[in-house]
Length: 487
Ligand code: UDP
Image 1 (cartoon, rainbow, N blue to C red):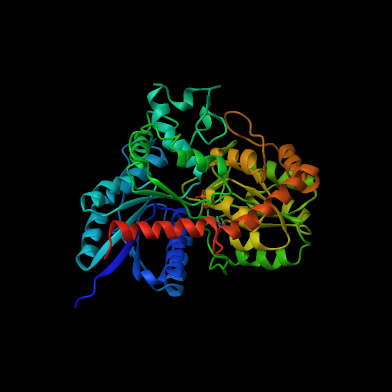
Image 2: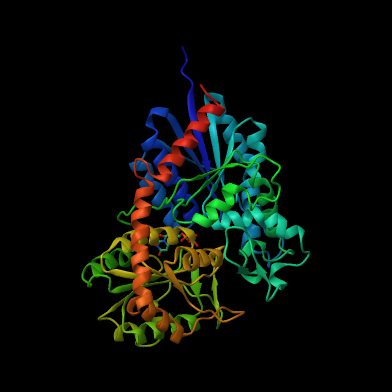
């Protein structure tokens, strides 16, 4: 008798944050549902946002978890139509160009195996139709939290009620179910501007969200109570006549703490942290792409210096503007720290501060006893990593959906204070940096936030306990695969 194999195929969007959470989901499935005997294949795109940290990460996972098969899709080079095309639009164009290769890989796997589930990243909706037409159940994996899911699910309704771009709606607040009010101009970047092709791609994705068999969200129920309820009750799905997709909150999925292969100054920071007093160090890191102008770096340096607190600061290659905060596509180029920081800063603060160039092993950093605060750009992985470590945060959103995450952190979870950013260029002064660092590290409010963060740390651990909410959600998910497609 020929034994039929079963496979789960996962398809992350490009970018380390998206890949890590899909890998963690795969590991969880293999650990908790071994008896299912399915194999796992992860499709990786090639040619866009290939940060050097991705290769070393994939190599590490391949050797520690040989049963996770990585299949790298053929290299695609996107030729942008205009020089002003947004990065999100280019990303969508890139993901769409991969669809034909995704289809042929799915067909190839189907020759020898039953694909029980095709789990696509929220930005890979363009692959949804091909899989559905092959009879493969499609699940959407939402790498952000439930609040962003609620907002995006509601986006088609907001779209239908105005003809303006959010970018032009100064002074208007968007009120979406499960979310705190958000200034329209702070909506997630891809949907800011109707002239941007990314806007229409996001609309397509948001309209298709409810067509997935289920939505898997990297959060846990106790973390985002309001938003999870709004999604589950269907308040945020405009077309409520259609059967709502099932929601599976299976997080927090974060990278394991392990020795990084990255630059040695990244590793040195761990031994430096181990020599600092308990809860004394403020860690500043702005994700894989968060970068500042030299003017903004100067303000941060001044604020840190004046605060008098210990710090570990990851500085990426600065953007070339004179003012403001932003991101760059490629933050990996070589540069000298001394040439981008104020003169004498490193020397003056060397007894209590460490600046790391480009990259630090963040999960390990956050797990260190000496870390007492985290200044974060509010990327969802970073937020979850802070929550899991029980480290209180200072929210400094930069791009993508980070302003939504900021609201959740500050107003719902209450695990962070927010920096005040000037309108327009979102510049943050040195005084403001000093004020927020002191607020978190010295004030009564800071103590309350610290205590709350520690409670969430326990809740995050409990979510994966035997009867934990995320453990249950994962079991339900696997159960539905068996019901849809029993062998
Ligand atoms: N990261 C890291 N060291 C760095 C910068 C980032 O380990 O110096 C990791 C971080 O721990 C997180 C991911 O990169 O897992 C960034 O994902 P996130 O969603 O926070 O932000 P993004 O980079 O997608 O904006």
